Length: 52
Image (cartoon, rainbow, N blue to C red):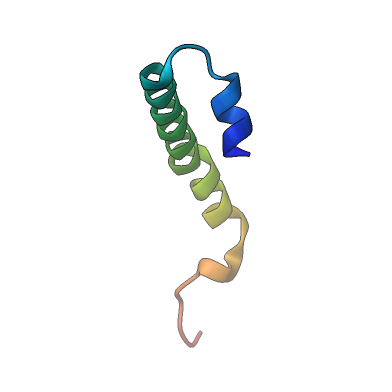
């Protein structure tokens, strides 16, 4: 998978490395902004209430 991404990024090696870092940062941003809050709001298994 990583080889596929590396082969399809344009430019020399140093530019591919910078582009890969930007893609990783964008993926982490999307996870923290939208995916993780949705998971916490959707699945009740994360409730920390003890003994109702």
